[in-house]
Image (cartoon, rainbow, N blue to C red; front, side, top):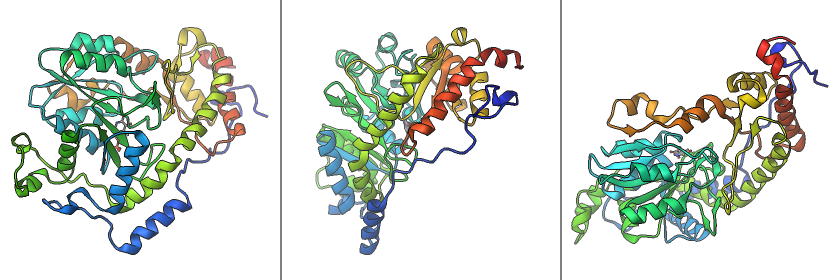
Length: 413
Ligand SMILES: *Cc1c(COP(=O)(O)O)cnc(C)c1O
């Protein structure tokens, strides 16, 4: 049995073997890949005005399946969500100097997609309970130059999308939902990722379902879907070959953001597993929360009323006044117990060298500063195949460190 002395102070660690790793890939994906390999066609796009402009068999089948799963008119696959975000901003046709309201608490790609087109990111503070942009702050930062909002569905649940869509309607703005971390989460009666004008999903290797690298962009607007497909696949060359292109698309730049047939074949299998994988995560979170929520000073993430959370990450908050120790010391002690966690998610993005060197705007963001520097602990130990015994070790480590906070503070037992 583990001693009560903290491992950091010379005691025995709660957990002395590594946790099993997450792997959602099985025999069905192997078979799907083999079938593609047998055809010899690993990608089937042509970057010209051509029937294969929109990709091959697997890509198109995957897009149709994504459309029907999420109940959207158009799903456009990409080689990453980063590409998808760039295509989404590109499809809006922003001009340099246009402003886009963004979150400082997200992966950098949610904002580089704005700066790459010369638009100005306007960072707004986040909601303390849900870590997503605060609609009140969004409203305060809208100017005559504001053209769009990138709303990130952070950690596995949707942003305050009703309020954000309301503001967008009032001010004539477009909303891009970065749903990279929340595929399968519900926002009321709808899926997260399908509430904004454009939604972007990620299929990178760290996400709940993956194709190694990959992304999907969704929209219900046919004109936007065409632009997304053009930007994905050498727009300028395709448009040059079109018999009668519309004036508004003549200036579109294309990239090569194309997904391969292999990735699409894997994605088709992974999509079928999404609901089960999310349920398995949610069940484990429920087990963790039932005990972690009893530790004074540890606050499990709140779930937005009427919505569901699919837990890409569990963003716990540590209230140091209640628990009697600083967040960073707590995390160090947890790690010594063999239960890794990270102190904070990302540094507020407006502090990143790239964004500091470019035009940007932000007022003070006291909530994100406090969350990042003092409160947030990122736990990712709740995926299948972790068992109740594994989760018990996670819980025991948090309990043990919390109970020994006085010793941790003074550095002695
Ligand atoms: C993972 C992620 C991305 C980027 O996804 P890629 O597919 O790796 O490009 C963008 N935004 C958020 C919030 C993410 O978590």
